[in-house]
Image (cartoon, rainbow over all chains, first blue to last red; front, side):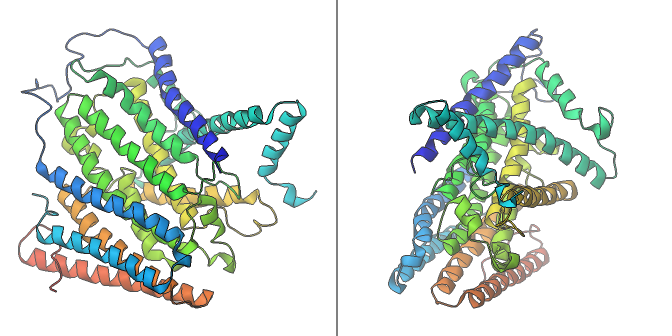
Length: 118
Length: 399
């Protein structure tokens, strides 16, 4: 089983180095004539006002929170799905209870208007 | 000639025998195997990207009654070669106050993600980079890197448009990952394995009726819609909406660094199509594939290109969604649908029905869930339009 991960490791190394090789080749070929106007931020020709890294809306944070809950849930459901044919009726009931509890969480977020985009 | 000899796996056996004949130690042989396999995947991916860009540009052009690239080479086939040369020699402009490390790392990570996903895609029976036993979970883990690359690009560019694009990446790619993975979970539940090759194997027999798209059409639909969003394709291309935020997260990138994002976009679409073809359309399964294993490659590529074609078709046809519509659709329609489908399929599998009856029962359940969702959504839409609210904001059904 472990020998499969050898290829994944080799691929990871190659795939991480290769983009930099491409950028390196481009660095050899391309012109390099920077000037302050050219390197300024592209915002439709208007000079940028204020700081770019501003505080972002809490809405994104709410969705990220709900996402984390569901992502962890799916992590648990994958092993269950693989072993599903070996589960008996009681265990299947527990799995369904688990999914229903999560659906209840989604329903709660929905009722609390966390899913509305303001 | 014995047709069963037409098997790509035999090339690997021949290659290993040759290395062993040269008197190399087994450890060195596996090392050479890994590196050669990885390089083959890389070369395949790069060639594929050039082909895909040509296909998509031609398709989009014909769908919009244009000619598309037709000057460089026959049918514009060499257009991409010209484009690559041009991108290589373009000046690379880095904005002055960019966060340099993150800025340079982001395109590399975008390429890294699609290349890594190629490793678990079965091209024919046993012709797969690494048939790991956690295939689907591996795809999910690698897929998250793509969202990070786009967020890093948006954040580090020191540009407000790029920043908004980066935030939208978080909102869109993370949200749609849930229905995508839930839809991939359902075939895993039926097949009882996460190996990609095992999933394709499980869909054999019954003259093609064993494909999960026939028994689980709703799961396939959820997968396809979520794959459109994960592939950053219209109608879900809000993170690079030209008319709103110029080009989204990659606005400040030029030259080769932009080329990597472009390549990653097309390969990502192809990988999602390939995963869909493997999990739902039977992968390399097809007529006579047991006798002539090499045919599997043709079936697999044909199915993948079919899905890619539909993606390109949708992209060329549909207008863009608004962000609140997109998020509502994911969390209020797709996710509840996927959860319900999971429970329904789990219960059906435990009833102990014989194979054909179970397939029909699954198909019936899928259609019931799909039709019920459609009815609820259209009712909610009618009510919200009548109340003068935004066009798409479904309410909870009264409990």
